[in-house]
Image (cartoon, rainbow, N blue to C red; front, side, top):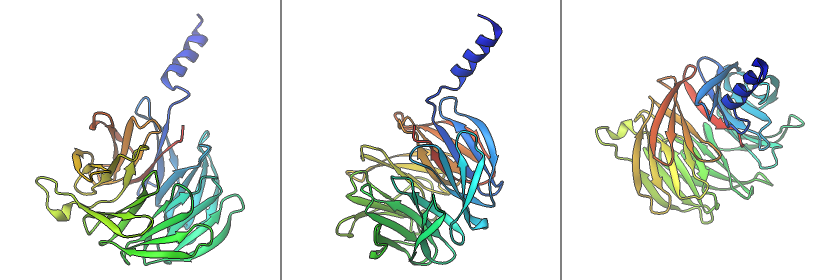
Length: 320
């Protein structure tokens, strides 16, 4: 076998075609770190707009969307080349967003003007502006695509919005500074994390009544140090991971019994997280230690820390 063929074989072995890519937004260094899920190594660092925060990948895996909050736009990157393709008109100070299953609509939380912007990404055209509470942040869409939920940090509410008419259906009061929301895979429940309140509210998605409030008592820490922010749920709906901010831990919660199974120590000031599609790993963005912690999901154990840019906040996985 000649040297060229050996080199090509080595490249294939080092970077399998099916490897998932993780994309981490770094707020202060204004860039995106790309991580290979097989090698657990950084493969690329790409310049982004000012203060990149919310991040997500299109359903077909071809496009990466990043909120450039201080530039009032959502940047679109080609995931193969990582070249910036265009910047979408998002409204002022976009923080987080969710995309529909068809990949043609973005629902964007605009923190500065208390509204959710619905954007047609192909036309770069605003479809609707939905008034919500003060400082909107968390965004999620029900599994069937019918209900959109936004959380407003200052109003302390989860706003339920009809995803077709864009009319608000209901407002649910939760604890202080709700940061994130997610539906369970069957769409029956909505989980909302309240950073300053120190709780997670589990809401019945149909009646919109609070079923349970979870509080996290981490040994050796005060309640003020435990601040729930980002969350992820496994595909079977049985486990929810909750990032606890300055507690530097991820809580592992049984989604059926609401029992807290474990606290996993990660980097400093953990924000948001992403599961690989096979749910082998959970990646956490740690804002103060400038790294990503890799958690082995089966073992519920942190196995590696990967240095990234300054103040990582968001992380998304390609849908391989």
